[in-house]
Length: 205
Image (tube, rainbow, N blue to C red; front, side, top):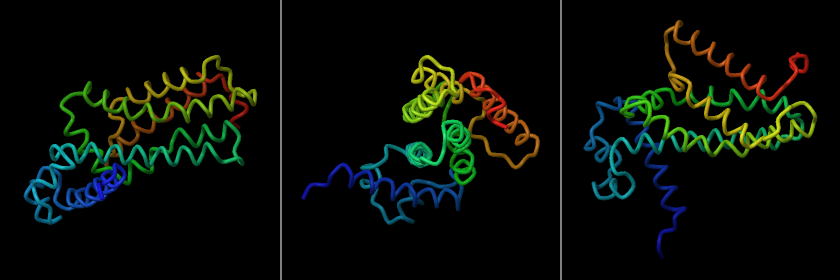
């Protein structure tokens, strides 16, 4: 019986998770292809069936993280107990907990991207998955009379592009100074979203 695309994806993600654990143990740079093959008991052919390179494992990890965040976003979107503003305030920060959980993998992603343009292009592709759910939240706010926006989809797309252009978007640091700066970015981003959507500040208090 031929393997289906779903089988391929599931197996690829299972192997990715196992390789992630090896990276966490030995470090990305210190983990060779032979380390991966020996630890996971994979043949070289089987590895290359799923990945073109060690770097591609990290890119698959990023896709998996994106899917995880999308699931969280859709849970918020479908929660009938929340109004549009509540959904928005939950939607904006959902990345933070996932980023902390995957902090080392995110740092490896920063490492393998040869320049900011390459990184931004990859993130933009991932970010397109969030445009529709984000636009749905905006549309809901328009219908509730709390968002003042004429073009919800285009607004969602522009705001997500702004988010992806933030310097060091994924940096998780042990240094207080870095984290303080990151907090300021998050607070500024939240205010930009609020202002862009025309939300009256009194509604947030």
